[in-house]
Length: 261
Image 1 (cartoon, rainbow, N blue to C red):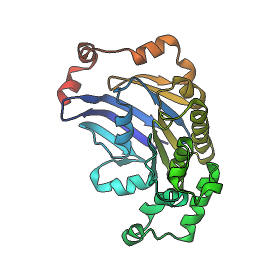
Image 2: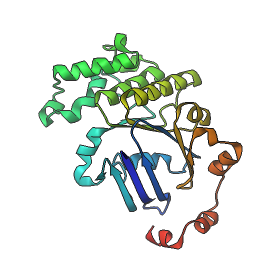
Image 3: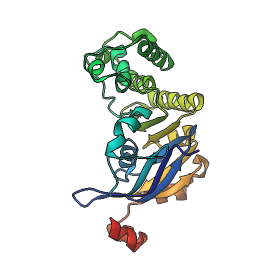
């Protein structure tokens, strides 16, 4: 069973920059995939494509057999939780309220505007906070927490959404090494316990090796490695992090793909 499918996806921005170049990849439930590569390789763009924050210039993105497009974004985003690098919390609101915002897509427009939540919403939020170890901080203001604790709230918010897919865009980039491991352990546990698809963008190769069941290496918008973390030897890492010139990139890409871009 495939939960996410990218087929020959190319993304060119208005300034001419190619973020992705003919990317094809499938993701199955119950796997944690780490996407690694140098800055500007296309990691965040790949994540944003799955959640409909960006759309392909060419190619197709599917989430559980639904082509991601503007007409079904609400439905797809209801199934896809996302964790951000900078937490995206409302600092003046309580941890519980921030967690409950994960339920807004399941409420009516009026309920969302007035922050009206049902008992089921509260139960899911309490369970999510318990899973990330913050049940005792439920009614503290979010800005009173450390960075690692705020990221845990971000994870709890995504869990409260009851997603089928979880995307994490560089979730540990702003955290110290010990806290980064704790966050990755939580994501690994979610993947194993809930059986959902987890995709994480990382700069830390050691974390990818330790916590991922699969690693995709991107360079200059292309997949240059897709396999088990154990296969990340030095020559593979050199290929992933090699600094390509534009001439090298063009020589590696088939002419029809360049024409489509």
